[in-house]
Amino acid sequence: MFVFGSVDLETDEFQSLDLRFVPAGRIGYHAIATEKTQLDLNLGAAANREFYSTGLNRASAELLLGGDLVHKFTTTTSPRKAGLLSQYVRRRQLPRQL
Image (cartoon, rainbow, N blue to C red):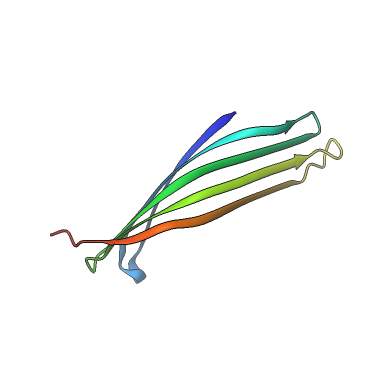
């Protein structure tokens, strides 16, 4: 079992985006953990807050489902395949803050 957390901070002057703040967290399970093969599965959530210089503020949430597979074919060859599926849960426009 493992946990993972992240925070993304973004800005974009061309979209008038002052700040996009996205904290996320996931919990995972080592489904297969042998010397040659590792399979990790994880589930989590993320929140998204956006603040624009136009006065628009938005919030949304996402559910995250992912996996990571690594298999060692030889001592020098270990391909990795990772995937992440995200689904918006809700999006709402927040009132302007003066």
